Every structure is written in C-alpha cells, then in structure tokens.
Length: 309
Image (cartoon, rainbow, N blue to C red; front, side, top):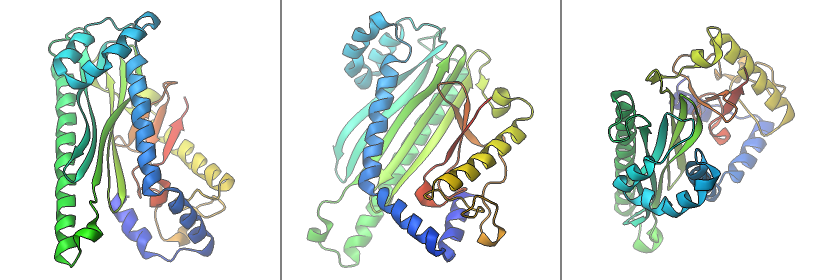
C-alpha cells in the first residue's frame, strides 16, 4: 500500500473506542516539541558516530578538534579524509553544514558525501552517482519545504490573518545523516529529511552499498535467496507480538488481539519486495523500515523490524 493511500483510508474510517483512546494518547505523546527534541537527539548522536566510528583511540582527540573544519569546508574535509581509516574502504564526510535562521526558516543542515579509500580526490562513478543522488534529494527537499511554507504564509494573510496572529512563525527544516553500519566493504547510510510547521513530517533514504563490488547491497545479499519468506514471517510475528504486549501499538489489518482482522477495512503489511527500505544495524542485521501510513496509523511513525539471520 502506498503511504498516501493508507492515510486517506485510515482518515475515512470510524475508529473503535479503544483504538481512539490509544491514538489520542499516542498523538499527545508525539507533539511537535517532542519530534523536534528527537531530531536534535538524533543529530547529536549521528555527529558522535561520525566523529568516532572508524578512528583509532589515539586519534580521537585530533578528530574532535578538527570537527569544525570538517563541517565548514569541503576542502578541509578532504584533507581530514586522507587520515588512515582502519578496516574501511570508504569514509562518510560532512561537506555541507549550516545551522541557523534564514528568514522564515530554522535550518539544521548536515549533508554527507562518500569518499573512497582508494581514490580520496575523485570518487569512482559508483559513489559519485550516490553523492549526486543525495545532493539532488537535499536540494529538492529544501526547495519544496520553502515553497510549501511560503504558500501557507501567503494564504494565512490572504484569509484575514494578522501579523500579531502570525507571531513570527517559522518552519523547522532538518537534513541529517547517520552511518548505520560500516565494516570492511559494506556501508549502510541513512539520510534524514524533516520539516515541522503546522505538522511535522520526516523522510528517510537508505544507501546500502557493497564498496568492493561497487553496487547496491540488497536484502537478498544479506538474507539469501529466501529473503522474502524470512522477512515476511519475521515482520508478521513481530507485529503480532507488539500488539499483544503493548496497547499503544496498532497496525493496519490486525485486531487488538494481534490477529488478522479483515473487517478493519484497511490492508496492512503483506510482503517485502526488492524495493523495501532497509539498513544494516550494528550487528550487521537487516532492519526493514516502512514509511508513515504505509502499514500503520501515522502516530506509529516509521515502523522498523530487525530481521535476525
């Protein structure tokens, strides 16, 4: 199911009494302020990972001192990138960084670039293509977010809103990344784009790469030829267990007892595909990720399921 279809269907049905209470409680727990704090925590955590992920202990102090340079200058980032990285074929560097206010926008921007160990001055075509995709996503997201807020502001005043009521409202725009896994020839990178104004929304993009073979890493590579069955059985079991043990959990197509419920009127999780989002966690296991409203109500955020090997 497409996320937009799930949202439209979910918004149109009558919510049972128990589910209504659960949804209300969950929505209150996910206020805009909480989301903003979560973005900040994620940003701080990802920076820490980037600083220390592949550094030897003796070099940690040097890396900490050079962080400002990496965040402000691509040339400086390249120089730092020439430092030895133990056991890795590539580094992930912050090459665009900006944090501050720009008119109606509060911006936190951290844009990554993948640099290979063997070609520090010119990444091969494979990583250059990934870097170009990342730049395109970031630029497009920033442009779209600004256009949406400008249109909202225009409509606000055209429909009688006053400057006092506007009260210097701003849109929060966040772009960040996390190196989820980097070991040997494998790299798993998460790119996060988020915006918050009337409502908060978040998108995640994943780049799972086999650097030695210069190709994307797939679920089949991680779990084998039977990956569809393995993922489907694991995700279904995890959904059932979550619903049975936590009344705050709710998934399309499943009743409050964790069993499939055709009368719910919404198709939920059915199967993974080659295009299903995933990343590798610290243990090297695949973690399957679904968009908001794809298999669950919006208050559930973006559900994740670790698939153990």
